[in-house]
Length: 176
Image (cartoon, rainbow, N blue to C red; front, side):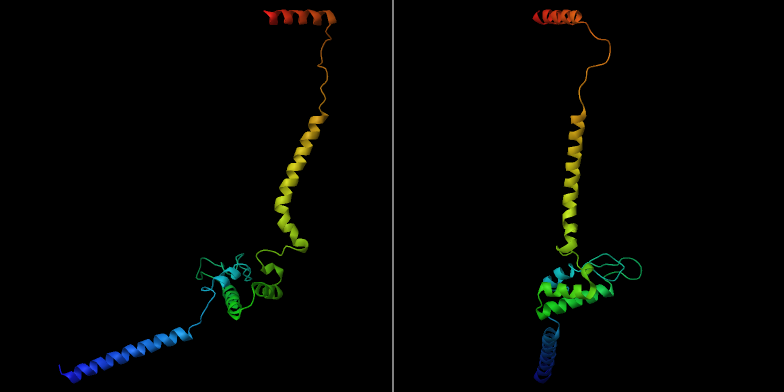
């Protein structure tokens, strides 16, 4: 091989390497910086809103329709995840993002109902109901025990002489 052929091969190799580097740099610059799958904050938020597709009772972040020809998150969940990711990218606060979903879908979109108004019962009932039941059972048993009054046993009456004789014999046996 001549020096001219070797030089041409090196130039072609350098041109290809430069083009590949330029392409890789453009891809990194133009690629989206965050997606719902990449942002931990978006993942957490998408797990706080329910998927509103009507076919599951999962959160938007965990929606997974299994079986059949389709398996994975539904289009509704994907759209909700995308909206969460866009709002996170814009810098919206968590409360603002969740409130926007409440305005669009109603309070049922939230995984955890707000702890105010009538929904406070949802938070208190699982603790209060068993405690109340235990208290009522305890009180009922306590009242039943009070009602039981000890009365004399039925049967023939025992004469006082016979009772005194039985006591004397019991005392004598215990002294032995």
